[in-house]
Image 1: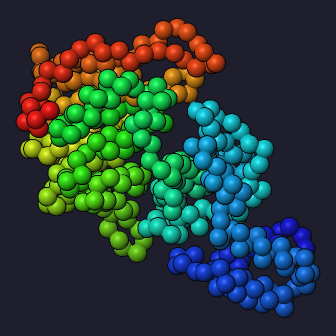
Image 2 (image 1 turned 90 degrees about the vertical axis):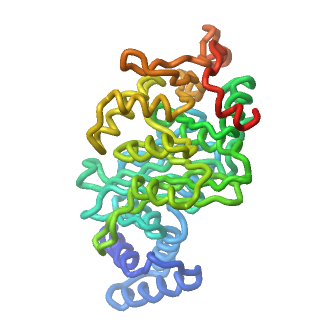
Length: 402
């Protein structure tokens, strides 16, 4: 059977399977056999070909094809599929191109359709860009052609099955024991903490670790674009996730909508996975009226956080810069900036406290700063997170009895 006819038959059968609902293995095999039998009446199919089609379609439906082995490998943190041109992975902080790849766009699209079928995300020509997640919590981004010129692009960011603990971060040298102790006190006292950093610097992971210090008696509400946080120590937790609009008429539910809704749920603590747009307005307003919150933002440095927040607030409403800066100073108690070093390792690079507004500028005091000592051991950058200042605003710590 020639390749073109084989691929047409595979695509036909995949199209007839209802991937939008859960089906057990026997049901899937029965449907596949039914359609193969129907096609066998129209064209000659050898027994070996029938078995191959049956096996490959079942594998595509129940698993993720050639990606399954990569996803099951706990040491791989990121999988990047650039159409049929190649597959890259991130392992131990380093990028590597694999020898395997999808031999057709159809097979890659089958995997993409399977991933998006089990969640409230739709990807097609009308909506070629989508964010979704796998059952194990891995984050998925899809960009279909023709928006993606070199074919369907699939990016999967994996998270460990068990949340990373603060002790593990200490073992990897991400931060110091002294800094860990101060952060623990700040979280327990209900301080508002913002975690900043670049892409892949570990912001979500660090936010998840900080949440382990939240008292178990509190009511916590998490708000995310795509649920990634793994908070397991809080019994009274509500997890909210955004929703995209679709052709069926479902209205878009944004981070702003969820923040506004969460304030009516009597939260003791809000955790917003990432602030990246107009929701910065609602975030700043909530922490300035007594709510405790933690969130993340993309920024090149701790001091760049101010300009990033200013830009995002202005996207949502007109407000004088001086008013925005006053809300930043009075709202956030601490900014923790993360980054990746030359060896791929992730570190806390700086911990700063917004102290006051001086000459209409936000003045920040550095509490901790990472300093390299210039010594490389086994290809690893060596350095220490040194304490260079003391936290000035300790009112919340005193009120909490800490």
